[in-house]
Length: 225
Image 1 (tube, rainbow, N blue to C red):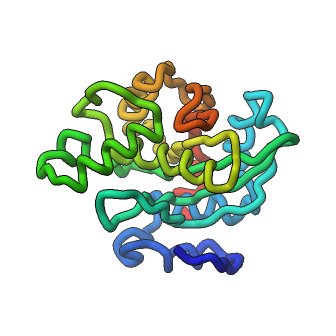
Image 2 (image 1 turned 90 degrees about the horizontal axis):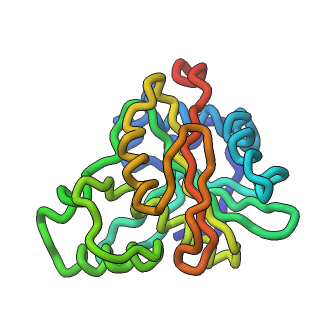
Image 3 (image 1 turned 45 degrees about the vertical axis):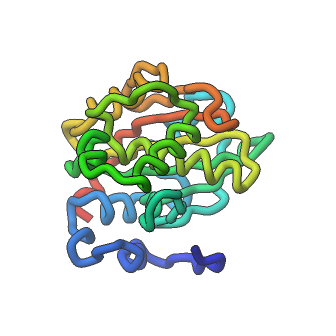
């Protein structure tokens, strides 16, 4: 993982960090839509800031840095958790790690059952690590989306790395129909929360970090950018 970062001057510069730039950098798709939304905001997009501010600890949250396509290494394989954007922010009192998953109509990827279909020692090791990071116990639902699991864990992992006592996993969805919200809803219920769009939920200590999740409805004007 690189340690030197250069500020972007346009949303188009985000494309170079995608695994498949030609395939994923398209108008109306999540990677491009999210990039234009965050790049033009030069901070938190208005709707993200508004939702975060509904909780007192994050009322004056300041974005210190945002890293597009930030990779968080995980054990049990070569592929990291690649955040659409990872943010380090600060409140009046402390730092906050924020992992953001952008969505339009694209699904959250395979379910846990599908991901485990071809079992391996590496996958077993990774799943054990992820459940430990999120302080989960017992058998997980087979229809749980694996992406939500490792994206949330990456927020917690980076929080500890930067000595941030709080972490947030945000889904920033630009879907007019809130496509795939039911998958997020299932994940939230696993953490003991009742999911509501445009709301942040505190879900307790996870991996030693105070953890929050949220679904933010994005500005659909960026779908045409």
